[in-house]
Length: 297
Ligand code: IPE
Ligand code: IPE
Ligand code: MG
Ligand code: MG
Ligand code: MG
Image (cartoon, rainbow, N blue to C red):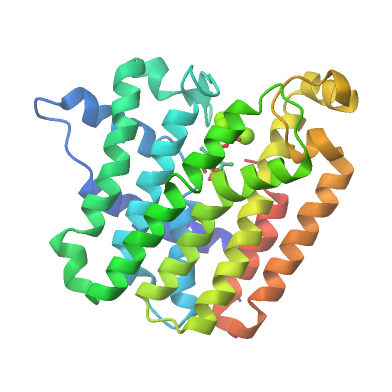
C-alpha cells in the first residue's frame, strides 16, 4: 500500500533538488531575472505535473528518476503560465499560494520576462546534453513536440486567450469545456503521456494514461474553480443569480456548485476506470485521482 502523503513529499524533494540544480544562479548580471524565476518556482507549488510524469513512468515499469529532465521542464512551463496568468493584464492577482505574485515583488516587466525565461528554459533542459544522453532521439523529439502542442497556441495559450476574452460574456458549456480542456487539462495530460513514453511505455499504456490525464486535468481545473468560489462568498451569490454574473464563466457559475461537483466526480471515476488495465503499478495514480477530488489547496 502506497501512502500518498509520503509518496508526494518524496517526489517533491527530488523535483525541488533537480530544479535547484538546473535553474540559473542569482550571482550574475541578470541577477534580478534569475531571482524572479527562482522566487516563483520555489513559492510552494504542489508539483503535481512533474509528480504525474514520474508516477506515469513508474506505472509502465520505469523509474521515476529516469524522467527528471521532463519533470523539471513541466514545472518550468507551469510556473511561467502562472506568472503570466497573475499579471494585471490577465487575472490581476496580488497573491498566489499566500505569497505576493511575481509582478508585485519584481515589477511587471521582470515578471513577464521571468515567465518568458521559464518557458524557454524548459526546452533548454529537455534538449541539454544531460537529457539527450538519456533518451532515444525519436522519443525525445516526440516529447518536445507534444509539450509544445500542449503549451502552445492550440492548447494552454488558446485556453488562456478564450478564458480572458469570455470574461463578462455570454458563453455556453462548450466554451467552458474548451477553456478547461485547453488551459489546464492539456498540460496535465501531456505530463502523463510523455512520462510514459520516455520510460518506454507501449502505445496502449500511453493511450490509457492520456485518457486518465485528460479527465483528471479537467477535474483538476473544475476543483480549482469550485475552490475559488468557496473562497469568495460574493462570487457565490453572483453565481446563484446567473444572469447578473459578470465574472469569468466556469462550470460552477454555469451549472451551480452541486451539479459541478457531480460532474467532477464523474470525470474522476472515468479517469480511474481508464487506468485499471495498468494494474498495481498505477496505484499512486489512483490515489492522486482521489486526492484531486478532495484537495483544498
Ligand atoms: C493552478 O495549478 C492553476 C490551475 C491550472 C488550476 P496548481 O494548483 O497545480 O498550482 P500550484 O503550482 O500547485 O500552486
Ligand atoms: C490557470 O487558471 C490556468 C493556467 C495558468 C494555464 P486559473 O486562472 O483559474 O488559475 P488560478 O486560479 O489563478 O490558479
Ligand atoms: Mg486565469
Ligand atoms: Mg488565475
Ligand atoms: Mg482559478
